[in-house]
Image (cartoon, rainbow, N blue to C red):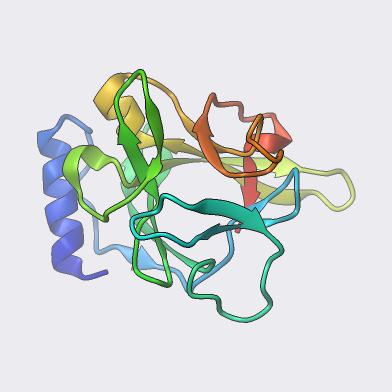
Amino acid sequence: MSAKFVRILTAILVALGAGLPAASPASAVSYRDLKSVQYNSCVYAYGDPLEDIYAKSCSTTPAANGNWSVTNVGSHNNHSLWVLTRQGGKCLGIGGTASNNYLYSSCTVTGSKNVWEVFPTTYGVDPVRKSYVLKSFGAYQSWGQHKCLTFSGAKGGNRPQLGACSTSSKTDMIFR
């Protein structure tokens, strides 16, 4: 992701009232899996845009529809803000309205719908593993709702979806 894109994203978010500080250059992380703590499976997106999002066995090699880059685009209330871009080129975001919303993406910066607020959590006892809950910053900015990437209640039990948030539920936690 280019530095120019990140500057434009940050400017738009500030203009929309996101309250982001002027961000230093964004830092991209190598491509990684987004792995469900509850189901031990990874998030894959097959459609363009991301209409077909599934959880399946994680690949040990780079997978165009399953590996994601994590770009830090700022912070909000002491939580990092991430943009998740799959190796195939699309971003993980949200679409719809306050009453009918879903995971979707087109990698546009409109309303910060591709930005995720990161809540670090831990899971397990021995060993304790670092995990994360991803709240949609766009849902909060656009509709005043807290919506998370979750695996609970989905058809088939583990299909990723946009849903209610809990920082203590394994169904909402991911490893990366």
